[in-house]
Length: 399
Image 1 (cartoon, rainbow, N blue to C red):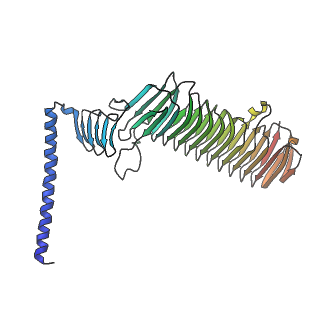
Image 2: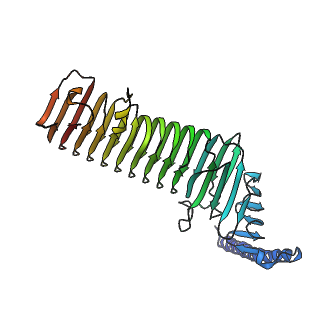
Image 3: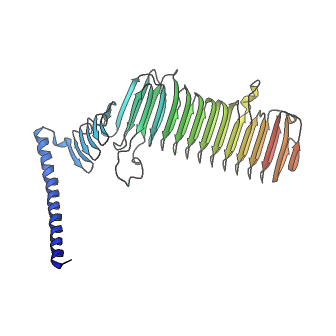
């Protein structure tokens, strides 16, 4: 390229850049003056106008907000204009300077619940009428609800646009809260609840067809709930079910503990990685329990007073955790552990079981008899016990 052309091109680029800079400065300073002029003309108090990195706010959080999300009139529940179109909120959201709150304590009958939140605690309460009460602290992560055809839907939104926003919420603030109110005779179809870091507490009596509860670091606590099927998952939080009645139940936790007390369960499947498992209640179906390093305690003594018990097979596996079981065990009983010990306290007599017990280096004790490595006996009984360990001891006693 000729030297003269190069010089001309450089000068032209510099002029364009300078013009863009001047235009931007004019827009910023002139635009700001124009906004204040409009505010003065329509008699908005200066302290009602806020211009910052989040955009322009006129009249407080419930007034007019202009930012990257679009235009909002009337607060989070008012008229919102953005890339998704125009929406008119139905929740009455109030703001007290610290928290946003919306509630309806006189709702129509709720027949189903679907909740998905991140940093909110969820609780159920007994009340005379159906209702919901929501409180959150960050407007960038609002929580809203909707009810349609009896189904209550609750969602937490992420209004941050930045690509570098790896996490949700402001972890330095209080947990948001979702409170759901149900009458004592509430009968629902499906309940699905998901929370990331918040606790989930459903401690009010009600019945439903299916209940599905998921949490990552929060605890799951249920009491006096009746469901046809129950499914509970937690990563680091505990799962505690008290007085839970269900024909089929599954519980899965990684580092959290699983505790089931005082309930009536049909088929039951429980899994943990490092968490302990404690089950005490009435069981009438197959039981399957798996844990890597957690201990397993299974108490079926409540089944002793049940005539014609429907208890099915029982299968328990651990790697390093101990297995401790007491009560009336019927059917096919299989237990496996590598370094954990197996202790059984059975309600039936010794002759009520067939035995196949093996251990590589652990000891075996059946009643008052000590046996080395292997014990096999066929009593032509209806129930059988199969136990296999590597270095763990096996001890079976009879009451």
